[in-house]
Length: 188
Image (cartoon, rainbow, N blue to C red):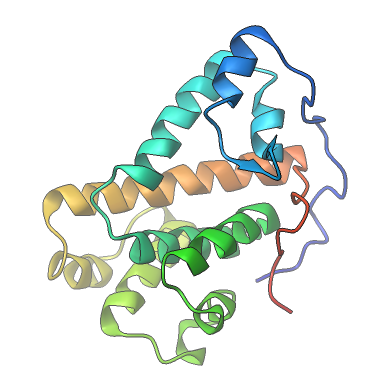
């Protein structure tokens, strides 16, 4: 799942590192690492209006959504693994650890679900990401498993989280956004 041979090895769009005006205002509220905006935001900074709206949705999903953080991160990490997005997987490894996922669980998300002793609830979330990756539709069996635990609003949010981070992974892969300093990539 982590073959990177078809991914750019350098940025196709260089992140902006000097900014002022509207872009500086937007980046002042973005996530940083060692005081610098993350590379994804510097890359999206070429289109400030898009970056502003991207951050609104992404910030909502990460900070104000209905889903428990651990379960949200499990979905995001599996989406990143399926998309072979090293940047996405690395950033959310850091976030996932802070949200209660173990390193063993994170490492297992790049392998087949049967390679780890997941709970039924975790398996349903992994299946959601896998179904969307394979066919852009959650299967009836996966839906039934999810519907047994999550209400309609949470189900809608699960789908939007998976879809948003599929979009993000495609952006990161295609533009060649490089890992920020100190952020891990895929587990070995």
